Length: 168
Image 1 (cartoon, rainbow, N blue to C red):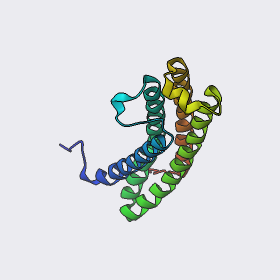
Image 2: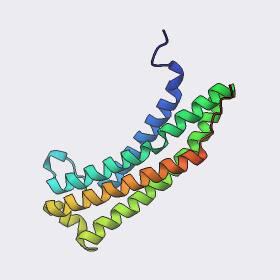
Image 3: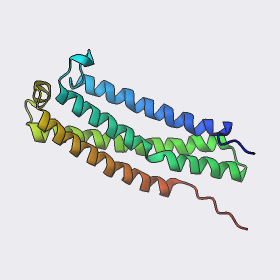
Image 4: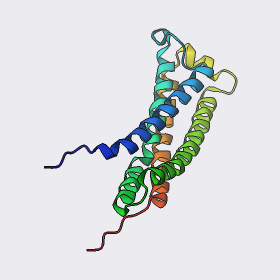
């Protein structure tokens, strides 16, 4: 009986975790520098937590766009008998650049949504003041944009992923 978990799958799992943690810390740094997240988090207003949570969730969702493609590429290289590690890293670098582009686009759009809905001068102060209805509206729009960008990323990944054809 074969095991469900294969040790060989640690390479793509490790790459995906590394990518997700990189984007998490980058997003956390940007949210802190924009003063949307303040420490201690228990002292934050609910509106800031709503917006920060929506931005972080959206970014996590976008980083899942390459999971299926990375596993498909890994299995394809493994079945072909090629150098699995080098080819997987090569594909991962392509996927990472696509995710980086989509994440940057997401950041610009999310920042634009915050600025447009709350005004260009006092948007961060409005979030910190406790505008919960505005924060919920922003969260819905930001998450909707992340769903759109994640689906776009999945489509881009299908064109970059090598396909394994099995002739029997």
